[in-house]
Amino acid sequence: MEVEKLKYWLDLTRQYAAESFWIEAFSQETNPFLSSGHIQNLSLAPKGGSSECFPRCDLYKYEDKLFVEAELPGMVREHAAITLKGKQLTIRGHYSTFKPNLTYFLKERCDQSFEKNINLPFRVNHHEIQSNLDKGLLTIILPIISEEEAVPIHIEHSAPAEAAHQLQE
Image 1 (cartoon, one colour):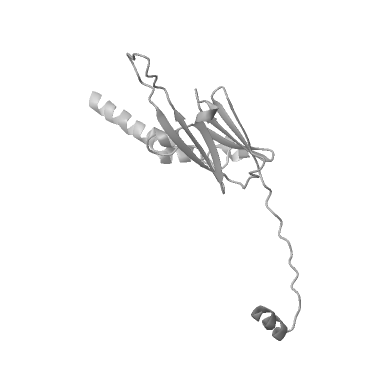
Image 2: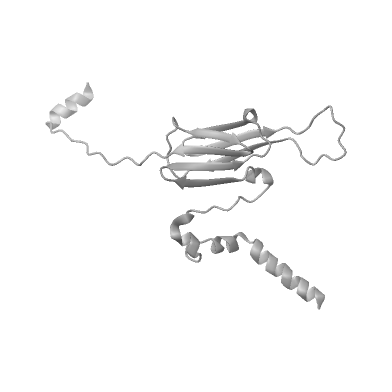
């Protein structure tokens, strides 16, 4: 009988471990909190190794700015870099934990490099981006560029022969 209970619990954990379960749990149709507009286009953490998930980040909009908050405990500013290309924000860095003058009896924190790519939902003004690293929290503030309104372009009237002559010159 114990084996049957174990199989039941194993099946139950598989159901909750499946990404489809969490997508349904956080979908706007089934969750009243999410349908209120507080969380839009929620993306779950990527599959795979920890390097894809590190650093843990939040991306949110407040007023006319996007905010990215990334957990970088123990990181110094000189070992981190932020770049923006188009609508893709990249956070890179390197943790160096090994100290050659020490005798280690336990060494679980390894040196590691990381790169996190975040696709931004809006175009941002790259001339006014601000960032700050304080107590292990990297905060990046990106002012949103409002979508440009369509501008009417006046089409001038000219004779067909005259227009063709201008193109040949």
